[in-house]
Amino acid sequence: MLTHKQPRTKALGNAEVKVEFDQLADEFSLLEEFLKARAAQGLTHALAVSRGLLWLEHHEMRTSHI
Image (cartoon, rainbow, N blue to C red; front, side):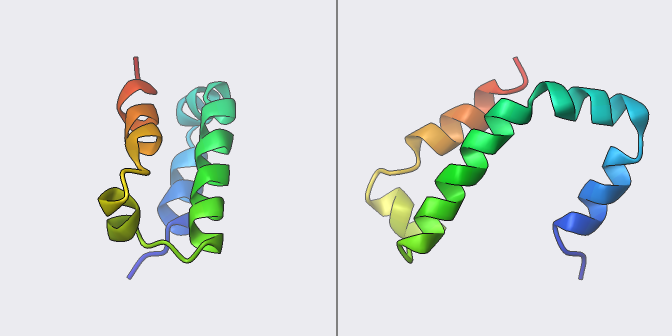
């Protein structure tokens, strides 16, 4: 089974992908901080959804490509 880092590392080896990734660094950083905070509180994805805490996460993921 692949880890998250393996395909990410491979994709970022492509110069065009790296440029796009770097342009979205602030958004990815915000999302990463949110995910770390959620994990630090011991919230699973399902529990966060049930508490209505994932609107920002899903909104960011849906609109980041616009």
